[in-house]
Image 1 (cartoon, rainbow, N blue to C red):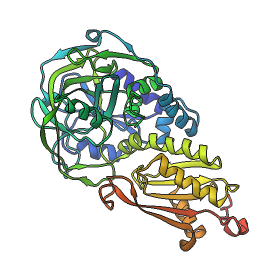
Image 2 (image 1 turned 90 degrees about the vertical axis):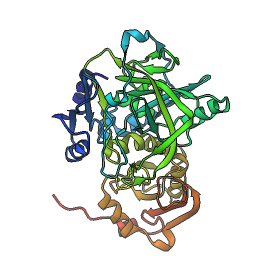
Image 3 (image 1 turned 120 degrees about the vertical axis):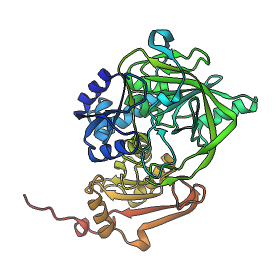
Length: 430
């Protein structure tokens, strides 16, 4: 992505640009982003590739995503996102040298930043790794910790990149990959999704952006969107590992140190467009939460609405880091049993969910005080709280045992066998 594209996207979201000039690589971006949620923070750091600008806070609300998707209402944004998954765009390959030029390899020139004092080292947080095995390609986010001029270590969980690595390992081979920086927000949103194996996230991003042009990297023939600012071509080692972490995760908890695979960088390419623009995603803050959580929220909405048509709205709450907690609202015509079914559909759509609160649609799902009021006035613990013990959840949950824990459903809706007037909230006159 280049600066012109970033400014155009900023105009769409209506954000004010806050140019901070050159800032320190350690902690500064975290403080600036936290204090300026409604502004696009733009900055530089010393020592990185010339003509490279960093930014934060392009997506800090659901409205930002809605506007970038060109949706009139939030529910339309959900549908557009999932439609792109179901109808990915056919990609068009163009000449690599037309868009990129190779420069001397040196990972020190990349914007590795330290975000929190608890973090073990400097990281890339918007690094998307693209890898292919036979006809299957995957693009996904993996935090990257620098080790040296040509080596880094990345966190890999048992998802699609892990599967591709396992297939190469079976053949005693390293895994060819492209580390990609500087994608547009909608391509990043696609890379944060988890479509079925075989659905290429770059094709999903192309359906969202309308730009289907890709290049193939010179040595390993890896497909990369032409919009990228920086590409590092190399391999994920089959045998070489290193300690990764600690790192602040989406829950604002400090993730553990683990032995993880090493990325061996071999070639560095930069976009011919200048200045090049790279996203600095502050771990645990709203961009991290929304990039990860919004696609799951969309999935929850579509799946629960399909199973229980009387669902009105869904939210993965900010208090649950847009990951572990959901609030589902239903119409008053929705039966108690259907409302309970909506909770089960939520678990099926987003297995990482931990606590689900069901409310009537007279309760604003975006107002945590109203949600708490609904629990206070409409929930009876012995009848309306259900626990599903020892079920697969999120490995991020510190109260789980390797991702296995309890799920809790809180039914905070008006009892259907009692007069609704008994539970109707008085309105403040105005």
